[in-house]
Image 1 (cartoon, rainbow, N blue to C red):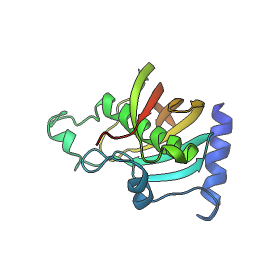
Image 2 (cartoon, rainbow, N blue to C red):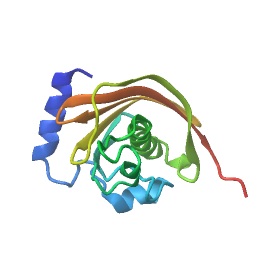
Image 3 (tube, one colour):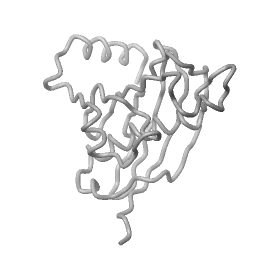
Length: 167
């Protein structure tokens, strides 16, 4: 998707009300994802179009536990947690696209072409854009980007495999 298409989509979403936009608050997110504090790394789903894309938001605050050690004098969100936040948005998209998998857990099966373009610091808002590339039974592949104020912070291709819990 081109930058112009993304900007057009973002502007369209900002003017729409919450009905019909695919917006989901934290309760909906917790209803689908197994993650909980301190590892739930998305705060809101701005828009979700099953089998196509999801746009999520992560408000990065100084109160994040990882800032206690990364780095106390110069806090920076770890790149692996930016990837994890993109993956959680991708997991939400996967569960919305394949409701029959909602009792499964989505695990990473691969991370390709991960690139980090800018630091993410307290006060930033990460906008996570995830596009479904492929979805087959228990396997999904997405292209993900994380942006801060429109600037690309990270990108990666992520592959998921779902598995039903044992027991």
